[in-house]
Length: 426
Length: 109
Image 1 (cartoon, each protein chain N blue to C red):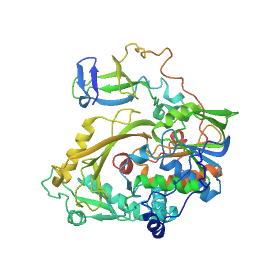
Image 2 (tube, rainbow over the protein chains, first blue to last red; image 1 turned 180 degrees about the vertical axis):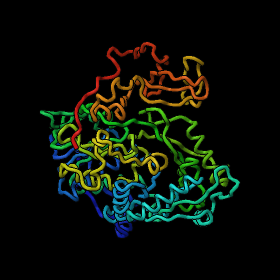
Image 3 (cartoon, each protein chain N blue to C red; image 1 turned 60 degrees about the horizontal axis):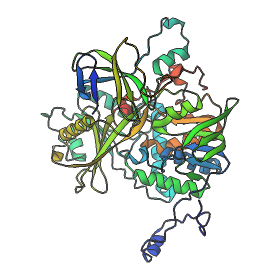
Image 4 (tube, rainbow over the protein chains, first blue to last red; image 1 turned 180 degrees about the horizontal axis):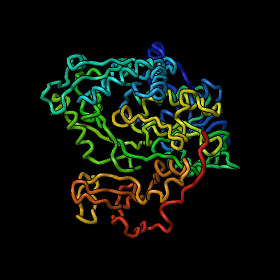
């Protein structure tokens, strides 16, 4: 609903001047950053799912393709699902060509996103280290460094002393149960503020005319002669020429409503944060072998994650022994954290694909497109995913960057098997 | 942590078990007779229900036997555990079968 007296387009640019001006009024007069419109009877494109990927899709539909008659339907509130639950890591050091190109596109978009959105996403390119703990890790890691370099993705191999120099709190003692034998380092990788990414994209999409409709759950699809004509929602039926489904863990549920199957299983992925402490951890450290990844937020909390719970679930919570394992791994790598207290833990539901790669594709229903299967690592792909999905929806064909990420690769066998770089740690 | 009743050993904590995904998928009688789509279906397509779900677990750190579990994926409530080959227990409060027959539509490239 548009409030009385509120201008249709309320976006004001953020600047040092606007900050100063609003300081005089105790910051109580900032306008709302996006509208809360009632749905129109129909749209050119409906994006189902108001997470980062859905909002990015709407933003790039408007910006790159001039399609502004777009609605983003979100059953809860925007950015309240996995976008607000991840460990905020952004990197592009994937092994295979398809993934490296897609994630590198995303990282490049991330690098300019604050300026593009006029919204500080707190991008911090502090470097991501992936540790190697045995000879096999070392070989695989070096292979990944070489593959990254061939694909134009920055990557370095660090010897244990260089690892220690880059992150002094790591235990590199050769007596450790899992000694650090080196690491890959992507210096352009790092972290970004997840909420800000969602909010900045929402604000910029809204400014270009996109309707962001929250508390609007899709309950079915209208399909005539094999093509979609609209969606049924808790706010009534809304017509659509094209529909993009970007709903992460609930993709299977939505696709079943639309009458086709996807090769996904939904699992809880848990993360947690510690009490805030002074800056001690200068980068992001990931370890597949002892299985944890950790960075320190600007508030001082350690942000810690690991792998999925093994069982299928939609419950947004997981089992405690998974967290216990993460803590063991954390203490193994960083003895300094042994008495650190943990403050909060939570779970999100991730849609994992058999080859640990995303599906950005046309579907058996004409004009329904899906963007799913990001599994445990979707946040880093947010702008890139939206960019290629917007292209796919606008043109009706995939962009060369996502041409390999089709649904039919599970029939043809042309999998993008990223378990090494994606399936374990993010 | 889930508490799972192994049909052979009784109630044990989840850490003793390993997960095996969707239950009641049988290997095709004649694999050579399948086309690519059917083979891909067998390998990759899985029911991913929100709600009652039949799945396999193995008691890795116990009797090491496989069995089936009927569990709700939105509440984690375990309705029943049963031996492989035993009749499928009904979903409490549900009249219709848990699983819809598979659609055989082809994905477009």
